[in-house]
Length: 190
Image (cartoon, rainbow, N blue to C red; front, side, top):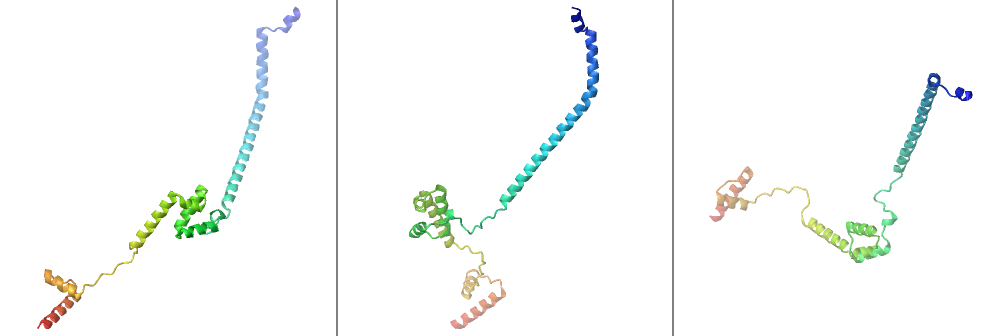
């Protein structure tokens, strides 16, 4: 049992051993802790550099996609071009206005049906009817922005106004015309 006593330490001895370890460890762990922090910081730096490069490359890829040539709006893609049968159906239906043709093509491509089936649709028929009415109304009304000329009043109108109200016209020219017309009328009646 004497061996057991040597292996067992008294509480005072164990606390001394711990203080020795802690005194030695802080000196040893401080450089280790600092090197671990440095390694961690460097790893983070590398990580964020990679993320930055990935984002930068992704933006460049997106800008490359945007730079792809876009067809002008005047050129139609093959998907929206009318086949000869579609043209025949439109001509037989007497649909010639470009807006109406566009409406029919759009509806047919949206519903993925033929132009002939689109023409039979009540939606398209109502749209075409509305478009026709709008065009008729626009044709019937004067949509010009030109000024209308001021109409010159005739001598007869000036004489009627003078006899009805007794007022003289405002402009000198009209007064001269009215006077000349009244003098002429007096000579005719004599």
